[in-house]
Length: 159
Image (cartoon, rainbow, N blue to C red; front, side, top):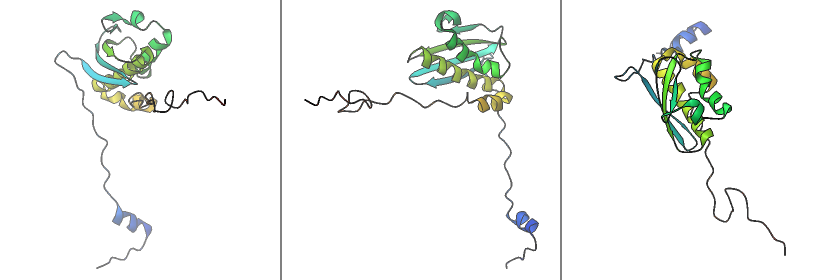
């Protein structure tokens, strides 16, 4: 009934579990040849469509430089393209709503990274390593009763 194992090699062979292959991701495009993804950050939600082009970026119908005037926000938005070495190879059409400009830039970055993976699945490992595919779950903490803000108490008066 019980087999006798003479060495560690026999033990490994007896307890070996077949490993699964890494999942193969397929390209996901719509009828117009675009890849679509949704990105979120704080209260902002961005819908991103990418297609091969010259690097034109449109955010809510306006050029990137007009909508995101601060250079830091534009840099945040371009990070996934820089990591993937695809700067000026895709045209982006973005609609973003909710939150402030910083949250919106983060949402666009998240959506752009996901859209790049939908268009070129082989970029997944590089973008995942940089953390662009992970949704940043930090949001504003709710206000509690008996407090002025989430954690700040009302001013204490000794007398």
